[in-house]
Length: 197
Image 1 (cartoon, rainbow, N blue to C red):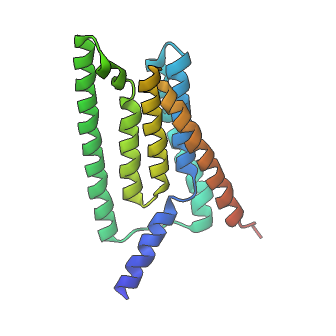
Image 2: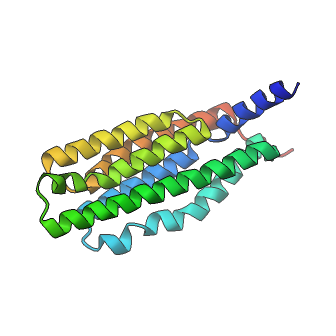
């Protein structure tokens, strides 16, 4: 019986992130960061504005759309512990990789670049690809592997073309936004709202 409940909970946990709203948010955020990085000179001031402003509205929108149709789920204590532990591990690994990226950037900047300098432009995309893979494993959303692949390929193209680092964000973000929009449309079609009597 407990095995059946655990299986049902695992399936419900995966389904919790299959509505596409988070994908849409992440995709639009990456598109904005890419646009700001490529075409807006004051990138540092503007890149984080869209995601920061949008995150609260995303949470409320998701609550209004998803919880209104599926209800609210309170996970079991082992599931919450597992999620908390893995989130901490994901954040820790992300910080380590980010720190390594900063160190590489500083070394390359001080030594004048060379072939390693071209690879530095791809670091943001590759860091995001790592986060996508880890997040896919954490929530059981294997579409994240496709997102990671788009970011990795974008990073390789940036290195080969010696282009700006914003291009993988723009291209990868466009892919993620498209998939997220399709998922949201499919979710709404499968779960139409309940009309008030």
